[in-house]
Picture (cartoon, protein in one colour):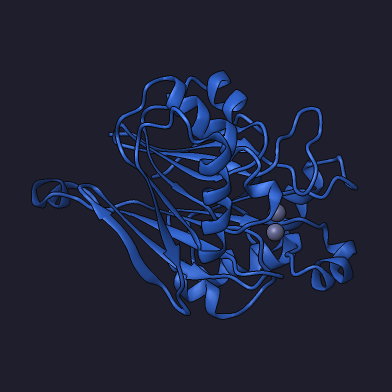
Length: 265
Ligand SMILES: [Zn+2]
Ligand SMILES: [Zn+2]
């Protein structure tokens, strides 16, 4: 009964030799979902033996290139493999012209339906519910419209007698704001960006990003089980610094590397 998170990219604005920009794959009891789709997502999926055709839905936090530039290649590859199943994409309204552009220039041979579900909420809202998973979207505070996602496992009555449902939340680019902890309250695993170490807090504030302490503070206030951070600035190559700084506030913190797998339990 797997429920795990595979880290496909941990860089921020620019790719680094061993780090792709943001992308993650969530596996829920054999089902596969993608969260953000930075450049290099396809190669990392191949390395981690993830099927392009199995992706049921794609959740895009915002229309910044480091979360999006991998999508054209991915959609094309799905077409080349003869995908026929509909693909659901949950993304801000501003994704509509991007998808139109793709389909008008590269849409020949795309024989599967792509349905864009525009995100537009001021508080957590249920956007997806099917079988053993429900997903809520909620607004983050970034330079442009940006959304986080909470993935809740839904148990059958029989499963519920034996164990509690598991949950994961993805907080993409955002600055700290107090409501966020309430929206990700009690999740087993929280991913939260930590673009900057604490020494660069002024840069974080100016660019609507978080520091290690911001991420850890949200994890602590939300009472989550485990915190995973990434989206590192290219200015700092020592990833252990991010982990150390988070652990000052929230001990069960981990700085992710590309290719890491986190079991959600
Ligand atoms: Zn970003
Ligand atoms: Zn951004």
